[in-house]
Image (cartoon, rainbow over all chains, first blue to last red; front, side, top):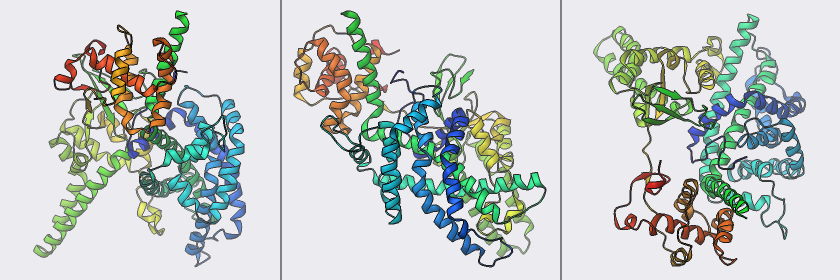
Length: 279
Length: 288
């Protein structure tokens, strides 16, 4: 592994360029990302379906309060998604971290690495985030102020708390990485919503079109809303996992000079090697 | 002419950059614009078209009672606005010009009129599937055109080509000004003192020079502990190699080496106007 020869050239990029670059990554690693995103999302998809079943909207033709039922259903789903996203995207995030340096990361390594980070993921992203979601604070803390907590847990693997031998903890690294970037992170979050919501709508319509072509009839029943639309939402979330990972790299480049560090590390390793040979 | 796709053998990297080599063996690098970078330009062009139609509709409505001229004008505007502008403005529409985008052939040459017209007419195919039944659905009905065929085409092609681009052999690139750097001035006197202590005749490799240059360009943006953290990787082997005392500041050591390589051995760099070379800035013998 040569640290200065990353698969994605490390340089500053605009958010729109990151959205485009994610298409390249999806094309190259499409099958693995599809599998890992599906693996991460499937339990939560079933969980959401089960939890929200009592609130599921009835058939559009049989109930006049369909629109309000639908809004209520998806408002509750949005809250659940905020809580579930980091856990659901853990496999894909770790895979992308490995794919930065090696051509074909082994899925076995991905599972092992996620398993190693599981305690922190459970404490921070499941328990703490769950509690914060209840008070709606997550919207601010995890999305705006600290949106890259998942990447730090999975890719940096610092201890949760500082120790004598470990001066940098997950929280301190998170704080230093996100410091003074809240305006930019907020604008990126809003931009993501601006892109993701119309895309979900258009992809949903394309899926409906396909369904109509295949079955030969246009059926717009409740099953479309509780099954097909959530699948589309998870697909778009999967894409934005890649964008968020690229955003994390970009933030590290801007805030920490990561591209410089990778080059220095590679040169340091070469120098060390030369000195050992000279001896 | 030859062109290499963004994920071509050039290190098998994923990037939005593309290399194009002319028959004269001159290489150009372009940054490709994908669907997300093109979307704002398309929105601006749509707003312009809509505004022109509405304004002329209002003016024409007062002048004549017939809708026919307006409909013909609207038809022409919808189908030929992009094509005519791209043909006359060398691959740009007002929206593209605003966002510094340009349509080129896949060989990096300007597009001709036929390519400009055809790629814009074929946009209708990229907007598919159009789901007419959705028009009755609240909110979703606004998204009758799904654009998914165009997005799928961009996803599957290495140059982000939609169907219109594939048919006409075109691509959209971002025009960005090249950043140029001169030699960076280092103000710390300790670095200059340390540079004098470094053994004479130490030759840096080309990649080491790049690392030094890149670090010195960026270091002012990093807090002090971060500078030390970054420089430790290269600074510690260098300290051992030069036989310097432990506890030395790695940041200053790297700066001292930069001074030695880029400034002291080339004093004309600071007395003359800074040489304008593409980053990373290298001494003449290290450029290639």
